[in-house]
Image (cartoon, rainbow, N blue to C red; front, side):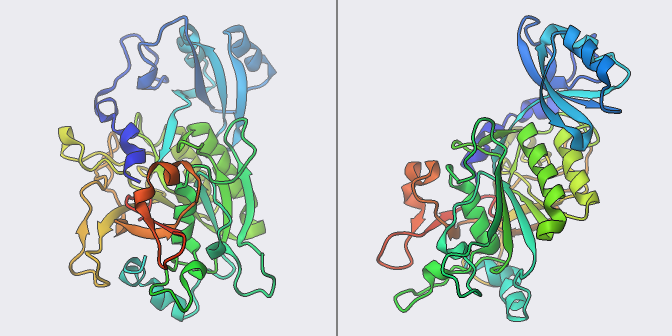
Length: 385
């Protein structure tokens, strides 16, 4: 969503940052200028996972391992900034970057993209698993299985948290539940004699794999996301995960060929998962007129990068316009053509996660289809697209 990407509008760094004189080319540009006495958490990508001898050398530099990222032959280390050059000089080290922060980025939307026609012909997501890598998903009524006689069978078939020291997989921010409703809401909460509209998701019978990487403020880290992607790959066959949705991102600091999150989404693509990523919401960035504002991992050629349109409250596409906030290509550094497509993302109605941070801070976005309690939220952003 728009507000969640404000913290990512530091594209002066994205476009202008360069390694300081004398720094190793294997160090990312945003590691330059750190206080040598400070400690920093970094993702170290290796040509091959380090053996015991190399692990001892990293320890001798003051490095302490924090997290394994074997999916991309990497690990998270905490070490003194003064030791970064020495670390990068190891022949087995490919690239070193900070464990950066990432952030979270229907009634007219469905016919605009042809979702209703697909559902009418049986393409409703039955048997397909969709991994939602976001702030978690609450088990709302619209995410229950309507095809079963049981009253409380959820279509959220798996949940896991990758937020450090947080075991709860419940959505405490509100973003992930809204995204999940757009993907797979079945309209239960807005179907009845007193309702005048039914808010149906794109694939209302799909199963959801809830992989939480964002905290109650909508913030997470590269390593959270990488490990969630690895989990989705491991769970692919068990839950038939065909699609992975990443409505989150951060600025570009290096080529996609070196960025650790980009390496992770490519591993998912190689495993046979379609990876769909929000383009970002910095299309109004003045210094570049919005160009070169596609985020990570939306900048990777292996993913489907989605920008946002405004439906103008009609089901036809002829009057649609690109939302001004929708990030535009070409991508920074690599100059790839992005986004790959655009979809409705403005003022989309989907599930409200009651009591979450967004719900508490922005009650004006609540939409009540009946006279009762609001069950839905109306939000805008490439996250929604």
